[in-house]
Amino acid sequence: MFTGIVEEIGTIVGIKKGEKSSRLTIKAKKVLENTKLGDSICTNGVCLTVANASFNYFEADVMSETLIKSNLEILKIGSKVNLERALRLEDRLGGHIVSGHIDGIGQILSMARDDNAVWLSIKVQEDILKYIVYKGSVSIDGISLTVAYVDDNLFKVSIIPHTGENTILLNKNIGETVNLECDVIGKYVEKLLGLAPKNQKSKEDIISIDFLKENGFYI
Image (cartoon, rainbow, N blue to C red; front, side, top):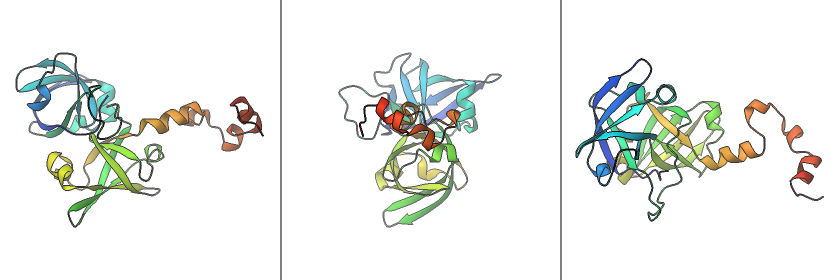
């Protein structure tokens, strides 16, 4: 579990590709403090397990499913990545609850400076966009951000100077992709209410008199 508060920017120094997987070697410093084998490090929003580590780097295996769902596959030697260690119980939850299990990728459409901040517009597929809520939280490449605008095709966030200086987000170019993880609460609510797409039910079928009675509502 993570908070979306990036601790350090790491550098990809090694990539060993398998048939459908890969092993990344990432140069880092701060996130290696008190880190041991088996610990989790959020890398551009993806939860990776430390498989090997030294004083200035760690290695992590990336399975096929992760490569398909994220943009880790396009990383190359020299690429920068956002890094965060797993949350400790005594830590402040400065961002929001981030699992490191991303929902998919989005595409940067534009960047526009607004005084000391930068507006970032991100295009995303409908199956992810439905979880993006105005003034809600979203993880972008592992960064906890607040949604400042959303419509049927895209959403926007405003990047403050501290975030811009301490993450890789503003170093990306228009058209590049970002890893997205929506707020987990919405997904749980959808599942519990039986609103998941696979059920293919209309709202009229789900929200009925019987449904309300079964769930403790009296009319």
